[in-house]
Length: 284
Image (cartoon, rainbow, N blue to C red; front, side, top):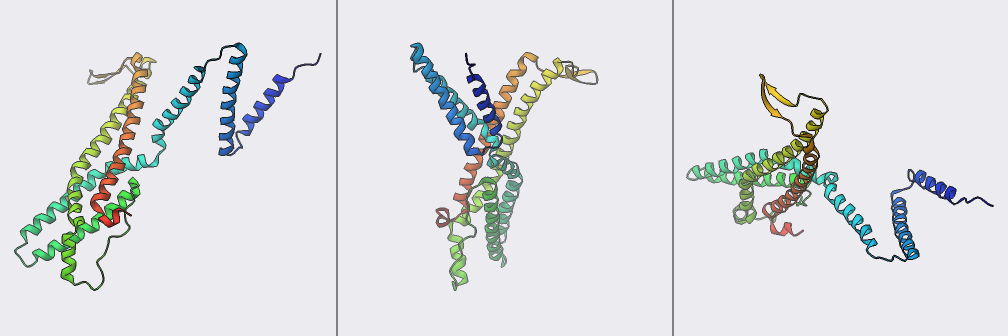
């Protein structure tokens, strides 16, 4: 009687596939993975047909696993998106830039209004308007590099040979002049809001995860079970039974905060483009 070599052949094939996985390119690994997944489905249907237990409900488990893996991949994939981290940096930086922009606009408008009756009042106001346009161009570069919103490389310039008074009139009647000032005034409350959302959201999430780790460490004898100051108890760690729930909730909350940060970055990029860019440039 000849010996059945099927298990040996299956083992050799599996070992070859596992070894080849270290050298196969990404597209080949994708094809092999899909082939194995469909092969498992077909094998399961064949077993059900042979046993007389045909039930399309078995496919539900396969679909649930696939959709669950896809949903989890998209949900936790926010950490691998570079725009999430650049948006986080922009939200933290917005507090500084917001204070600077707000101070610049308020100071410029106040001094222009105070000097309007002097000979230097109008030139000072025109210089202030020109300076806000330079700031708008710099903010546009910052928004484009950190938030990914496409901004025009340079503003539209008036036609050559246009008289200076006509250029001044065009600059003062341009909506971008006034929407830029409004944007700079709006950046102070937005910067405060962005900074609070980023810092509070991340600190609370990391605190929950750290609390879960501290509970496990204290339960295993690492630490005294609390924090004391001058022999007065200041903080007691959470119960070890609550550690898994704190860990899961902290990770989910942190991931949700990162999604919110990325969404805020996209929304702010759209706001900046609508307020800092002329209408003819915004549609490019």
